[in-house]
Image (cartoon, rainbow, N blue to C red; front, side, top):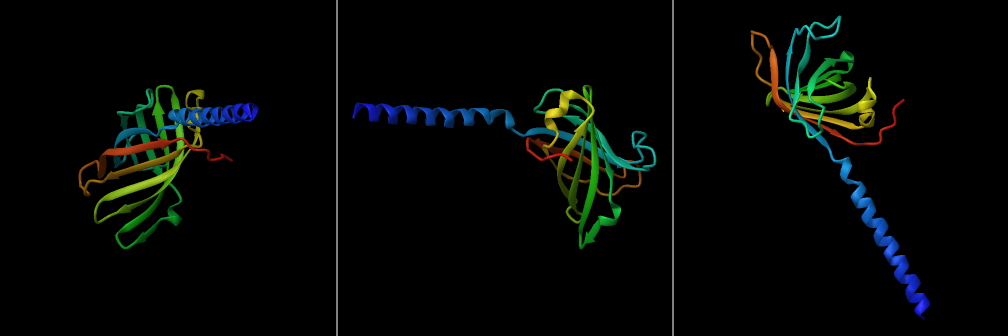
Length: 172
């Protein structure tokens, strides 16, 4: 009888140990949050062939070293759709940091009446080992766009929330 209780107690302790270790290991997988102040205009930073892009600083990150600049360029224009006041759009982004670049893609919607937008996508690559752990992570942005102006910037989106969430997306 004592042998059965000993086996049951050991099994219970092992299961409690395994359950507690998985909760502890989830700690580093918290979302990374930053703020971006982007403007849409004919920036000198836009890639060759692009007359305009979204560009601006990345700041106040919960992950040290991620501060720098970000650029969004429009892609797949034939897939863009206007439905009522809602624009469905597709972009590629590059985050420029002191340690290297982070690349990704997203798809989003912009409510042109409320001047709000949100986009979801993926981190698809990097040019440095410093940011390899972010490849396959989910990318999210949400903000409010200014009204159209005649003077540059044409639009700006200050204090936009940018979030990178660890994920397991397989990369091709």
